[in-house]
Amino acid sequence: MWALCLGDLVIISFTHWVYRWRNPRCNGKLPPGSMGLPLLGETIQFFSPNTSSDIPPFVKERMKRYGPIFRTNLVGRPVVASTDLDLNYFIFQQEGQLFQSWYPETFTEIFGRQNVGSLHGFMHKYLKNMVLNIFGPESLKKMLPEVQQAASHQDTIELKEATASMIFDLTAKKLISYDKENSSENLRDNFVAFMQGLISFPLEMPGTAYHKCLQGRKRAMKMLKNLLHGRRANLRKHQSDIFDFVLEELQNEGSILTEAIALDLMFVPIALDLMFVLLFASFETTSMAITMAVKFLSDHPLVLNKLMEKHEAILKILENADSSITWKEYKSMTFTFQFINETVRLANIVPVIFRKAL
Figure 1 (cartoon, rainbow, N blue to C red):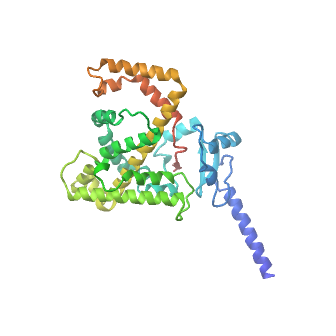
Figure 2: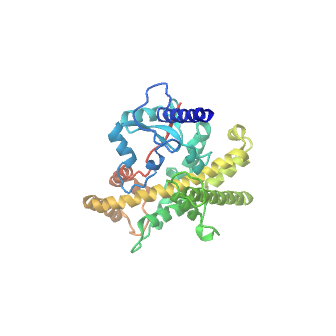
Figure 3: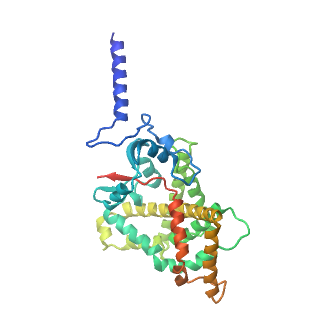
């Protein structure tokens, strides 16, 4: 009798739990959708590989079934997904008021709990200014010859790998004065291991892609930390990279930042996370966009011909065809900028961005 009652209680409790999972409480009215399996949600479908540059199948199928706004559950968190232009515009307009940048715990674990995407207010503004100091217009002007030299002619290349390697080397040199030729460890190898498990099911077990991803991040962060400690021991001035900004703040006892936070305990981890995210974001997203740009050009010969005409016209202006282009010539490439903007629109590798309702 007691066993039967206990069995009934377990079944009722489980049924109630499944019901609450599929119908989460809400003060307002939730949009249509499915919360998927208990605990798993629809995470497996979300992470399914997609070889198309079109809207991800996960989103496309649910748009067709439920409309532009639907509910789901990803990595254990209830989510409302919106593909509605007006609603998305409203959300961006209310940044910091009704909504703020947010990522699920699994993403936070990957990119670091103090990553720049999870910061708000004073620290976010400060780090943004730090990045602009390094990658602002004045700095980019000086980088033009380096970029042109790095993009040297080769008969045959594996495009995605070659562009990723080129961009990572340029960014690492500019960001942390890293030179792979004079380093005992290959920093990019750790980022490659990180990337291969980034879009995977968040199962933290040895042998899984997610585990390899976290290990790659751990090794990369260790390298960045060692580089910072090495620079701290050798205070000679480098090339105004991000290490210089960090060390300057660590030595500046009278700064507002020093009063606001304990730099050695908080600012250094944040700065290291920032370096990690910038290095990752620069080489992976940009190399993918460049690869897609070449594909689009091969699919649209008229665009390719017009692009070549515009660039050949600029080359004719140069006194020496082998000399580097100037900032003025770079800014004159209006058709190139239009092509780049269209490529970024079509080749965005980020399937979703997250916001938290305040």
